[in-house]
Length: 101
Image (cartoon, rainbow, N blue to C red):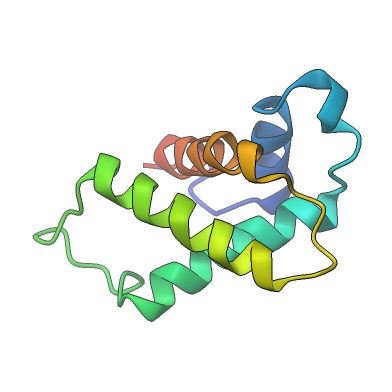
């Protein structure tokens, strides 16, 4: 099993999580931007430090990430990701991360 984060595989899962009619409007850069926002959230909240004792509740994390990504996308005038797709995109990225464990 490959335990290294692979952006291409994460993007593939994220693209599959949105409705078919919108899969083509989100190019790899748009989805990579969402991944970057997720990892920025992790960094800002000290979550890149590995400490197995401090598990964050998945539901809380996903909700916080969705809120954070939506806020960041509102600030990014060039972003094409629709707010209604953020939850599915974040959930898919988190599912990809889980698949690495």
